[in-house]
Image (tube, rainbow, N blue to C red; front, side, top):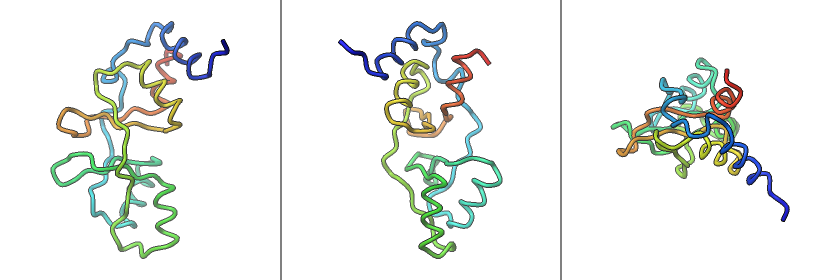
Length: 141
């Protein structure tokens, strides 16, 4: 039987010493979020100033409602008035703080996402885990 890349990655993750590390031990805790209703211009400015390529979108109570990327904003700047509120993807894959590095590694590989918001039981953003966060742990940086 030929193993898929996802299966090989899963096996590699399981054999790594760090594969059982919980997400909360290596996630980025100081997450830049954007509030639903923010103007396109302000969203672009925030991503630019913070040198990030995407951000979780939260409502007034801090609950995750979506995710916006620089690509999303590029399309909006090209087609809309930048004084309008930005739109975002409401279908967001999230992880929990106690999920493992191995699980996140496979999820990032299968979905090709660059980042996954980490949420608590109230859907509040408590962190974000990116490809580079996982890679740094896998090579012990």
